[in-house]
Length: 496
Image (cartoon, rainbow, N blue to C red; front, side, top):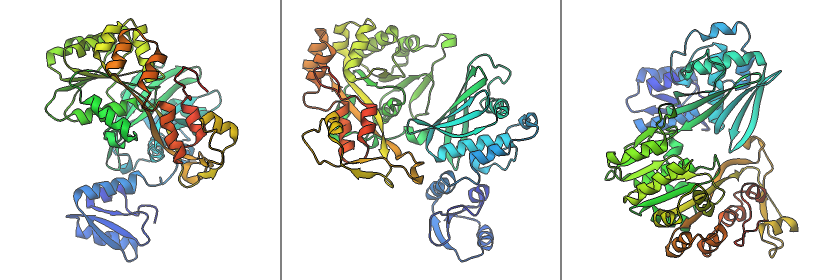
């Protein structure tokens, strides 16, 4: 059985839900479930059923799995097909329930939006892009870092669809000339989700980007981030420092925020005062004070960081170092005996030092405060259902630095229905950690070049490409994916 046979509202209220994927019809039954409801569920099933008692916590997890991860009753495309008629009359009010799976509304636009969100979450999408063009409306999902078009619709659907999303995120539906930002809070099968909404005027109307934020994904431990054991242990050692600055660097979408939140979760022992400055706050963290930035009123990273000392923090996380003022204040904060964590956009860990120097930060200040720089990337994981083993050609082995291993076998993507014919499902972390020890501190103080710092820092540890090769050799990702995400670096500064 692949689809629930009772409604979400019935399962939530009565404590009875079908367990999908079992050979025989199985009902999960919550402690204290209504016996009358159980009899009714058996009657509706019309066949013998197996009962599986669960406590409240187990039942909540099963409820989320049975509905939140199940196939939709109709795909987003099918929902879109029902959006004919007078669309203006569909904006009279919000759905009566905040839980998408409990909604019973038949309004086409609402059905479309709910279908989009449910389908995107089921397919593990991190973003939904809604783009109006001259003759169509395009809807794309970002899955594992790659955009995939899921369907197109008539352009006349665009205006009411965007207006409805604006209403849900409490934006001004009359303002179509300026970009706007908002949020939608909802639940899906018991999972609390935030959807960050950004609108932007274009030639053919407003485009909308929806970023789906699942709190469960942000509260990962360091042990499940996919670091190799040596890197994880060295990173934990850096986090145990009582003061200084720890930076996480990489391009947009490389998992920097998740890594920082995981680090904060380890540091959040209850005996220290942890504060964060974020733009915006993406996930709520229990026991940590989080301050969203507001540039309209002058609440910037640098301005807030200057005044945060009066709140007696032990650890501060600054969302991003974007300018010289923020960098200088963060480093001065670390000089007062506190620990500061932040992100910066560079291509490598040693590149962060060069970037801070270019901002005007003095080398002596960097040498005395910087404790570690973690550079990271995400590579797509090969689908376990369809990946195939092959023997790579000599040119590819040479690009990988494996020319001395002819006959080596690797794995590559093919594509199947399970992975949406992409050949990949999920992502893996690739890391390089630069720890600032006595020798690196001296090089930074003396103004050494990026290549000199890299040569000293990674004499006994992996750089990004070498770290990613462990995933290629184990068959978890493809050589093409690693070469796409990471350059093959050489310590003398060249690349292949």
